[in-house]
Length: 366
Image (tube, rainbow, N blue to C red; front, side, top):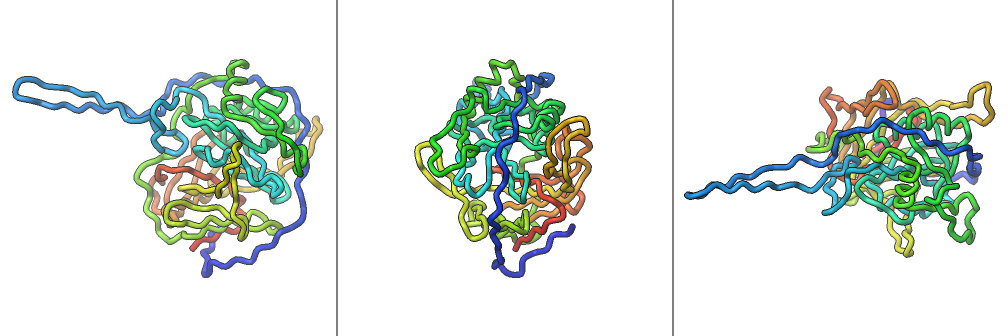
């Protein structure tokens, strides 16, 4: 579906009063493992040679390690020889403001039910001590996480969905583990009170002997970004007609997220607040379908998005848009991104937000 561009920054938004369902029934925790990898995400060392009249001095300079998730340099001493941690975060209006999104190196967003999306916060060289509300897994999730070798923290999932995650080789942890805790309910529903930390996930993963390997490579190509071909100071993603569209606005430094006209906020464990933001937006459009349990098992159907084959890819950076395509054969493959000119699409280094977006829903930018 060819995206249409905005002729005005105004957008009529409608908010429905519907709400999504509660957490799925939890089945036995997976202990699946993946073969170890030997790749590293750190940049190679560089050598500088200085010659004087009497001697030659060779100095080896080791640059800071780069995040495999967004291409940014990590802080000095950051660990990169370890697993990626992925945490599923609720995005129902009653779950906002969420916690931990501001700490993530990258975030994945996809539809779960009733037009509502959920997030997967990703961490490799960074950590967060307060993440939530944590919610259940969905069929789209393992296809995004398998190439990263990530360990997945969820609140639970229907049994047949847990089987899909397990079969994809994605180790996962449910709410029964010591990696999670409940916060005081206040005015929140019980299913929106589960929180955790990346350290907690790593500790439980170690106890269960999940692989602790770094991702085999960066999941996208980072570097000198593909040049924008149209302005994109405002990007509008209409996930569902019954909910306000998600609007990203470029402020000259980053994209700020709004739900309709309302800023999308975050809060940390100390009560500090801010607006959800990203440096780079990547929209991968795919076929949305109803994923259903096997005929022999129980459970209910849920929306899912196909991330194999190919589709349209939209890259937004620096207030501009790049149109192209994505392709891959299986959920364990990395995505191959190509611009409309047929050359590889390169993302700028920066906090990355990946939207796995239904190809029958409108996108717009201007």
